[in-house]
Image (cartoon, rainbow, N blue to C red):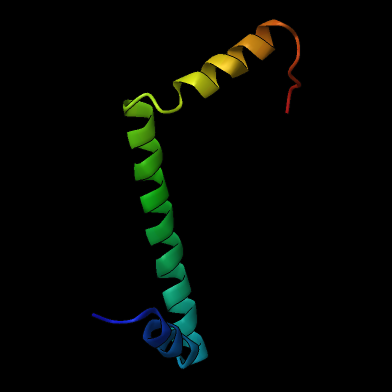
Length: 66
């Protein structure tokens, strides 16, 4: 199994164009993982209480428009 230090070393040794390519790939990869986790949290109800508290605050006039 590849160790984190080996991955860091390999990334650090990438030439600028390959580093930029890796960065773009990783941003898409990370965003997709985050989206999937968020979707799972919604499906399993992990965010229900947070949403309820936000709606309570909104109904009481304790929120601001962004």
